[in-house]
Image (cartoon, rainbow over all chains, first blue to last red):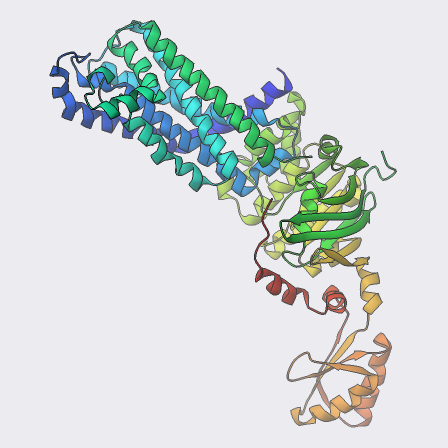
Length: 258
Length: 329
């Protein structure tokens, strides 16, 4: 194992231990999105009778939403954990070791991946329990988990960037409403082609979050939709790349060492 | 590499934060194996100096070498040579002592087969073996400080920076930490740069002391030399009859300058040191003035601080605490 890989491994181990030892960090991102899914599915089921609606059951259509909400929680958890390290001086301790900045960021994101995996497995299990069987089959479930983890890591990297840039947990938490707005103005609750209000449809079309949701959704209600998946994976990859690059820049200031 | 392989050399070191000159051109030298006490009130520039010497903060001007390496040009080499326990034990409350050791040894690149052994050895040395698997959030302040020290030692540093290591500790924990720091210097030859706002700590631990105030070093030397430099003891006398205070004061005035110590007593800073004590007792006896209590106060580092800055260390801390904090960067 190279030195950097070893550093990533040990920092990832710490990050996973931290998440595992804070049950609220794991339970809340699982429970709240599922509760919202239950409420939405119950209240919006009649929407499935609109001509052209792509699913018979709203719960199948909406299953992608918990994955996105889970990703938002990942942003908060990853960012506030790192902000706490900055505020307590733990980052300075790490700075005095030969640790590389990228190892620090990737290690932190490993915790995000850990929670995202648990979330995704629970969501899929709940889907099966309520009779929603992803159309893409077992292989599709694997891809669904992979995409969900990629999305969570992308959002988590945004949280890590915010923590590095500002150094405070409060600023990281300030991201939540902003990201929530992106979620609301997406195709979260309705397919874009059925949105009749022009400005909302335009916003949902311009909003990259719509394509992440549609990629996840396609595996559940359509089967294999190459275009939707390609868009979702491309946007996830772009989000991860841009956020990691921004983290790298922020680290230069935050982890000042001569 | 300079001759001072395990030492510290600082010349004209400056650090500015916007309008504030936190460290204002300090010079100092710490010899290998020495414990150097950097004494000063809160906000005097102690921690800023430590951050520069440990490579965490680039200096605005000046030059410093640590273990023979330039802190600006040779950051990685400096970090390999030093260990540091910075102000406030920076620990993860969710990890155990052993988890911290495992992380720190791994990040320092200690070979896998040595990591557990090194971690246990240090936990044993700082008396945390029984608590090794407990999460740090259950540790007392003293235990956290001891873990912090152990973490700073995992890679066998030649120079150790301790930034106010005993602030907030009870006397027992403080003594335990002092014992370990003294042992490190004496038995392992580790050079120790210790910042403190406690006079007693500098007095007990340090081979030499630098006193910093408003970013300047105002005095430097061994505690004994510094005290000797201003070194006149004070004799404090409480007469049996409080009505006789003025007569006692008239007698004491012959031996030096009167100083205010407490309302019930009269005190004099002796012009000729301890030698005046016998003469004072004889003079009081000759005047038939019975004494309820007599104390000889040796000069302290606080007297040195007072002499050099015109303020007591405690008063300086209160004054600086009232000023706004400088921006971190």
